[in-house]
Length: 192
Image (cartoon, rainbow, N blue to C red):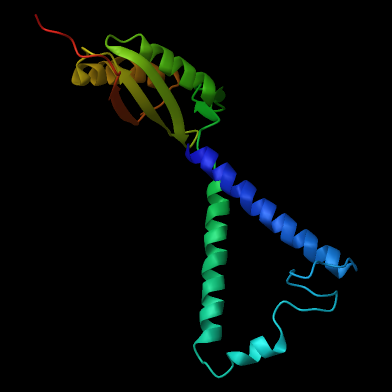
């Protein structure tokens, strides 16, 4: 859901910037704007001399405006870096013993790990995402447990079997995992 909200916000901000920028460009190239528009003609400015001089006597105004704009730029840069950062690991470095190593697709390892986790007793569904660096991956596992499953047993079997197999087959020293357990929704049983 966060991804779709993010895309909607990006789309709306992009649309507003495109419309305002396009209209300013059109007015600058000589198009006549409607009477309610913020520009009158191609020689009009956004902030007039009277508007700039109105706050000149207030010593706090311009430093506040500059600080607010700087915070806005920093927030935009932080948001941009968060968008560009990869959340999933695309490949895992497998130690082959010859000093070179081999690359294993991250999605393939996630698929095998989630498939093995789903075969465990008491596990209805499993989702796995690999994060971290390719030489030291970390797993985020979400298990949906069946109604009568024991969470501690499912967690123990996951770490002792599925995660251990993945760690050993990839030749990793360790494979830390964050596991999130949920129970499948089911109706209450009647006792007679």
